[in-house]
Every structure is written in structure tokens, then in C-alpha cells.
Length: 255
Image (tube, rainbow, N blue to C red; front, side, top):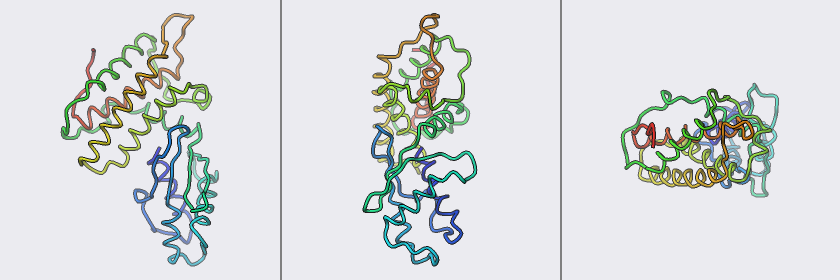
């Protein structure tokens, strides 16, 4: 989600005919500040205002004016599809508060559903393994087997997300936290290791809370919904990615 919003902010700027190469996508200042609802804070309007002396035809009177202009461009629907839509606001200091729509969240999770283990690169081992990550991976396997779902849809709908419980949305937030970190992780540093350790713990905690209320059965009177199986699959993919990328370990086939 963070990589997407940075890219789209950059494209919103770069698509203007008089603004070219002021910055690259990875330099866009943006960070997550809240999980419920998912909210990102960006200072890109200040970056743009500080560079306004390079722009002849767009007189920005303040960072807030830059933010208003950016928000209009970011929420436009005229760009090439697929376009991730954002709900946003600009405060009186010019900072952008952006929230992905349910459609955007569904699109992001569906992209994670399409990831296969062969697409995750192995990195040198950095710390010891987390046994709890191994647990949630195998627990997802057990629940999916219990659901008797031979095929998982690679798409989540907005309707499915709007009916999810608080514990499910908290788990989705923890998943996005991990992938936001991965999208901006530029190398193996002590800070990066501490962050992924903290995010892994958070993922485990939110999964265990979700598991308390996760009733899945192959019985006809308790059918497993596709959305629940999708969420379990994304958790499994995320746990596997952390184990492979940061601990150079393959997940356990059974517990």
C-alpha cells in the first residue's frame, strides 16, 4: 500500500507538463500513522512547495495550496487503469492525510494472493527464527485444509471487506504494515531487523486474536467463506515471506 501511494503521488506530480523529475517515487515522504481506518501522512506538498522556484507556470502560495492541488490530481479518475483511489484531506499546515478506499485495500490484498513462494528471493540469514511465525503458517495450513477449499479466488471484493470484523481488519492492518516495511527496506541494518521483528510480533498477535473467532468447517451448515480463506492465504504468504527473506528458512510443512 505504501509503495502504491508513493508511486501514485509521484505520478500525480510527474504527469503535470511543467513538472519533470523533481523527485523520484522512493523519495516521496509518506508514512502510516493509523490502522483504523488505514491512514497515511505525507509531507510531499512541502517538498513540492520548496521546489516551486523550479516551476514557472504554477505559482504555489503555500504548502496547503500544493496539498490541495495534489489531492485533486490524486483522486482524479482520468488516469490509466487500474487506478487506486484515495480519500484524503489537507490540514492547514499542508500535510496530506490519505486513506485507501476499500476497493484499494481489496486490490492490494488480491495482489498478495497471487504471490508464489518461487517469487520471493532468499536473503542471507540475519537473526534467529521466530517459532511463532512457523506456528501461524502451519495453523493457516490446517484451517485451509479444514475448509476443504481446493481453489482460492485471487480476488477480494469491496463488499467482502466491508463485512469483516474488527479483528479481521486489525489483522489486515498488520499484514499491510509488514509489506509497507518490505517495500521501503533498502538493506540489512540493525534498525531494519528490529522493525521486522516488531512487525512480525504484531502480525502474530493480530492473527492469534483473529483465530479466536475464526470458525471454519467443511460442514454444509458452516461453510468457509472465500474471503476468510483469502485472508488466511495472505497471512500464510506473509509469514512465509518473512521466514524466507529475513531468516533464510523454509516454513514447516507440519507442526
